[in-house]
Length: 170
Length: 128
Image 1: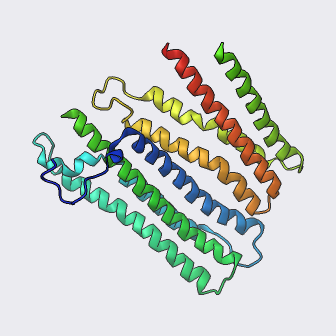
Image 2 (image 1 turned 45 degrees about the vertical axis):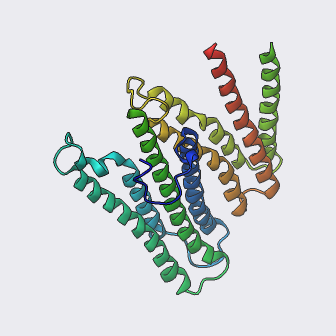
Image 3 (image 1 turned 30 degrees about the vertical axis):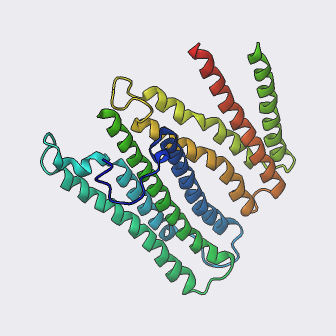
């Protein structure tokens, strides 16, 4: 294992511990809550204190919905299936299927982030919104970016688990 | 007998937490901060349910690496942050006042801390 290493520095030992994995999952949930409530704040703000004519409507929700779907898809996949074709007992093209589904998940997530920037530009910057009204668009981008970050942390935590169980299984 | 003191202290903290949350609602005649109590009372539920639902027969998944347990942890992290984020959102949108926000956040954290301490305490009791 140590002679086949690619990088000069070894992976730190704490990255493989169970506690780091658990903490990572809690952190991912926390970040997801921050993302959701950033957007809910924007929606509530639009209903209550908003002085301008621009309001949150369904268009603003679409990027968030796509990011959320992408997050579900990415993190539902069993990570060991991504290299499944190297095992003899797996069925036809499981690896390929897993990669296609994973690609769709990543595409939905990247599409969500890009869509939120689109909404920010087309609905708020082009309309020359300022101050609190601009926040409605910025919150949308921030929420989608946070969902992406949460998903990345969840992914890393789950990969940690794989290394750990692999060592145990051997 | 060391457990008795812990129980008394924890119940006092729980009472203070509820007091702060109820005051944050009643002082301003605005009962939205009470949602925080619901959030924190529901926060340990996902971990508890998913802990019951985990597959004990699976040898490979032994040692907390079950995906349903991880779902429970994710939900718990979500709920805990939700308890802090909810008053902040309400205060930012002028639905509650800033002091009410501070009181409900502190009270909520006290309530949740008590629940977690109780869970840890009773878990330790079960082992012996």
